[in-house]
Amino acid sequence: MKRRILQISLLFAAAALIVTGIIMGQPGEVLAKAAKICLECIGIG
Image (tube, rainbow, N blue to C red; front, side, top):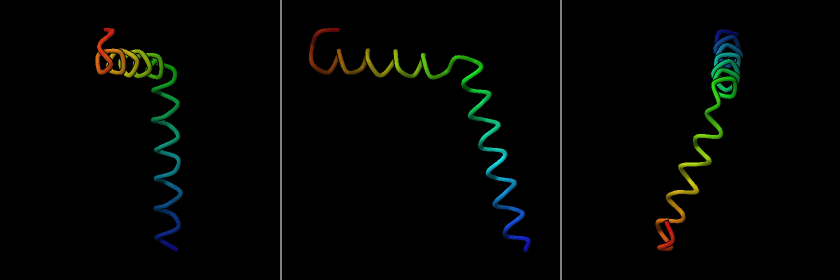
C-alpha cells in the first residue's frame, strides 16, 4: 500500500515538472540546442 502511494506521488510530481517545463518553453530550447549540435557535428554550423 505504501509503495503504491509513493508511485502515485512520484507520477504526479513528474507530471507537474513536465508541465512546468512546457510552460516555460523548455522544449523549444532543447530542440534548438540539439539542432545546433547536429549541424556542428556534420560541419555546417
